Image 1 (cartoon, rainbow over the protein chains, first blue to last red):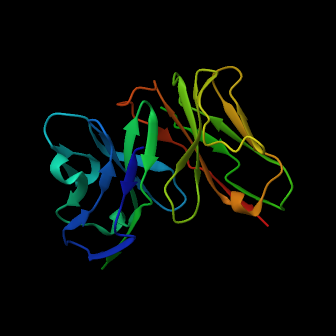
Image 2: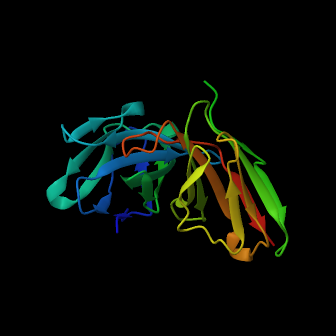
Length: 111
Length: 115
C-alpha cells in the first residue's frame, strides 16, 4: 500500500531564508507525486506535481521540488520565504485516482 | 471559473444527531471526492464518484456515513448518527477525470464539531 511520511511536523524559518520541507513516500511503481498548500480555513491548493521526466519540477509561488528515486523522496524547496508562505504543506502520492496524503508540515515565518 | 463550493462552512451538533454537507464541483468535472481531515492529519479519502457512480468507498464508514451524487453534478455527504470522533473538516474536491495525473481542485471545507 502506498504511504507518505512528512518527518517534520512544524518548521520555523525567518523571512528571506531558504526552505526545505521533506517528504518520503512508499510506492511500488513510478509514483505520481504532489505538493499542496493549505492556508487557515481554506482548502488545499496544488503547488506542483511530478509524473516523469525532469526530476526537478517548478511550481507556483516560487516553489520547486526534486524527485529522488534512490531516496524515495520528493522534497519541496523555496530559496527565499515570504511571510505569506506561512501555512500547512501536504505531500501526496496518487495511484489510480486515489491520493494518499502525509500528515503535513506547518510552516511558521518569523519577521 | 468558479471553484468547488461547499456548504455549510461550519456546523456544530451533538452526538447521535444527523448532519449533511453539500458540494458543487467545478462545472464539467466528472470526478468528485469527499475527504475527512482530522486535526493534525492529512486528508483521508472517504468516497470517490465518477459521474454518478461510486469508484471507491472502501474507507467510508457505511454504518453511519452515506453519500450520493444523483445527477452526476453536486453531491451530499451525510452522517447519521454522529459520533465525537467525526469532528473534522470535510473537504470536497473535483477533477476532470480520474487519471493519476489529473489535478484535484479542493473546496474550502466544512468544519464539523460534534459535542
